[in-house]
Amino acid sequence: MPLLTKEQLLAKQKLNIEKVELAKGDYVYVREMTGHERDRWENSLLRITTLANGVQRIEQVNDDFRAKLAVNTVCDKEGNLIFAPEDYADLSDNISGISLAKIATVAESLNKVKLEQQESVSKNLKPGRKKDSISS
Image (cartoon, rainbow, N blue to C red):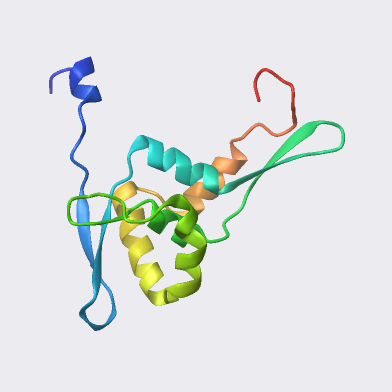
């Protein structure tokens, strides 16, 4: 395999898309996330709080894990996302758990993520940084 050039790395990659069959013949498309989308999704699963002493605490929150994953992966046939990140709550409240699980399972597979792996993200964070620390 040849070494990729800067131009090749910066060119828009074709992302894998899969059709996900839901109930009664309905379906959606789910695709791989870009690097930006993945970072945005991972950050949506973190809560940063500042304690009284100025130390920041970072914790994993898995509320709406599947809906947050879905809004970053459900797309049209051409691969354009159909949701905005803030749509996750409405999606979570209005779609069946079975349909959301089907979407999330395909999204997890395409993007090589699992809930268990996401929990390890918060374990690898460095808690206890001061808010004004250069490394925060």
